[in-house]
Image (cartoon, rainbow, N blue to C red):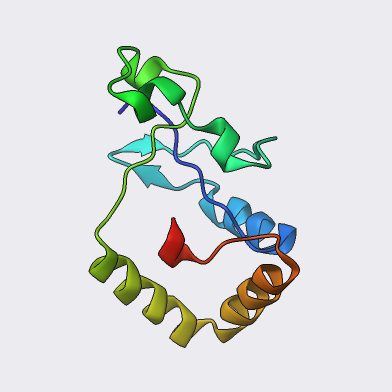
Length: 107
């Protein structure tokens, strides 16, 4: 596999917990190399060429090529997450109220 996976967390503490949990984990028999990213605005990190058509650099591009899932699956996963971790929904709602984040429905 060539490329990176980016995960955005509501808090730095949640990101640190995930980082710690990923240490020593494997994906497809290869070690996961977790690290923190300086990206603060994922919209600016997206590949504009990919958004306009097709990026020829593929996995070697230094920008994000987002992969989207359908709304039904996204809603099901989101509902499962909020059922298991209601504090995430509260934190997200507070960020939206402050204008710092958008609802996943709009992404």
